[in-house]
Image (cartoon, rainbow, N blue to C red; front, side, top):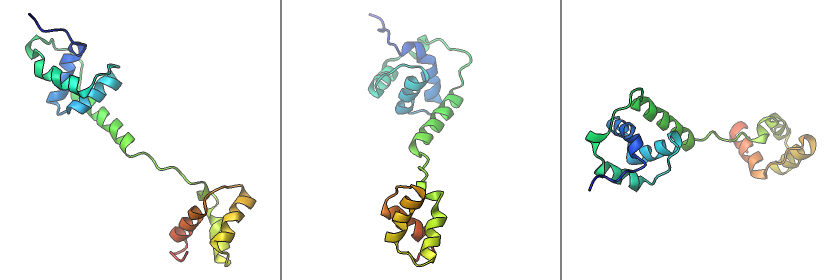
Length: 138
């Protein structure tokens, strides 16, 4: 009885090249999902490696495993460290600082932003802005 065909067999050469390039099973699973539109579980990939007939897999020209792995790692890094959202107060922060310098309290600065500029932020946002930019005296 021969080896049962798997949907991973058609990507066998690429998977073996990724493994030689240092990819983990989880990385190969993500590469299959996003690079080849083949959704499989990590356990399926690990089982395929245990049972794969490496000598029966034909090499495919033009596949750069190192470049594919670098692209996958860059994609993962972008998801791991998302850009922080910009606060609405950044554009009108000078107004809060000016009010603070004139002797207004946080409770007076907060409604002034809403009434004069139409910005709805939490009171703690105003407080953090003042702590950060008013020489830590808020």
